[in-house]
Length: 116
Image 1 (tube, one colour):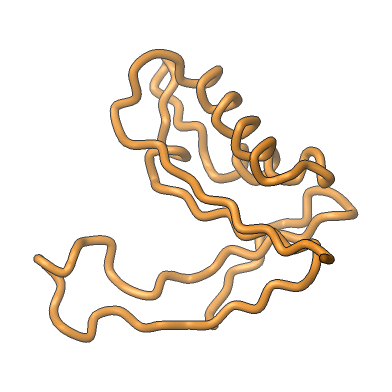
Image 2 (cartoon, helix red, strand yellow; image 1 turned 120 degrees about the horizontal axis):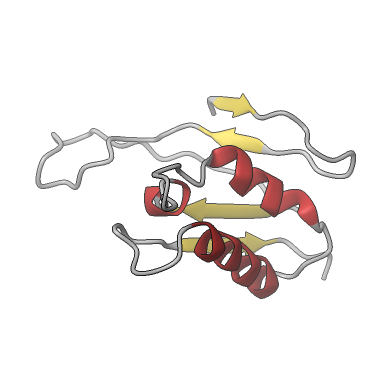
């Protein structure tokens, strides 16, 4: 799987950005076979955070995007958060950056592998 390593922001956290497996557009626009399937194994303690571009492209009053660096910083800020708390914290920090009605969807999913 093609991955791009992001800088390690905390000694206890390692972030790996996964590569795209197909075009951003729906099957209405893309040709058949445009997507591929890949497998990702999560080890105990691993967290998969999937999000739409509206989250990182949220703009403040000065038209500055929230950005990937700020998202990563929030993801690794507190390593012991559960999935629901992680989502709540991410959406809160994005709301503080870009208050008001979003101009694009802001969607995220967290999948966390526990030791149980």
